[in-house]
Length: 224
Image (tube, rainbow, N blue to C red; front, side, top):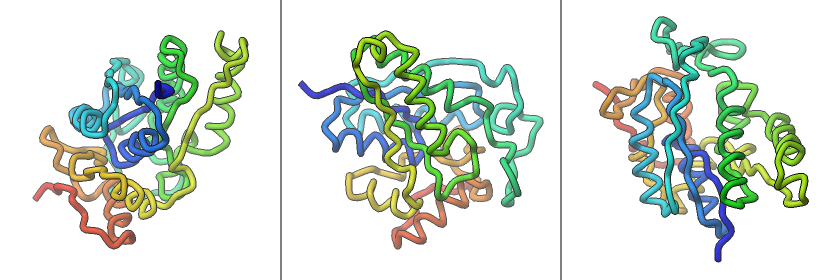
C-alpha cells in the first residue's frame, strides 16, 4: 500500500506541480483546498479538475471565512489588487493563510494516519510573503511534531516544500515533464468566473516570466 500524503491544492501552477511531485514520489495523494473568501475562487474549480487529472485519491474543499477578517486585497473587494511591483510585503498577502491551511492539513493527516504534507510554497520567484520562507516551513514542522498525538508517539511528521528553492521556470519544466496541464491552472489574483487571467497582477507577471524563461508557450487564458 502506498503511504498517504496530504497535498494542499489551490488550483494554481505551484500547487499543481507539488501534487505531481508527490504522486511521482509514490504517495497516495489526498488533495485539500480552502475556500477562504478569495476573490479568485474560480481556482477551486481548477483544483477539482487537477486533482482528478493528477490522480488524487480524493479532493476535499474546506470553507473557512478568512475573508471575514479582511486585511488582504484577495479577501476584501475594497482593496485594489496591485498591478505593478511594490516594495515590501504586498496587500495580496492573506494573514495566516498558510498557517491555517497547514493546520487543517495536519488535522486530516492525523485522522488518515498520513505522515507527510506537501505545500507548493516558493521562496525564489514569489511575492515576498513571510509564510513562504524556509524558516516558516521548518518551524511548522517542529510545531507539528510537538502538538500532535502522532508526533508525541514517535511518528515523525514531515512538511514537504519541494518547490521552495526552484525558480518559476524550473517549476514549470518539472511539472511539464510530469504531465501537468498548466492550461487548467489558475494563478491570477483577480481571475474572472471563467478562469480568465487579468495579465497585470503580480501572480500573472511571475507566471508569464516563468514560461518565457522556461522557453515554453504560455497556455494561460488572458482576458482581452
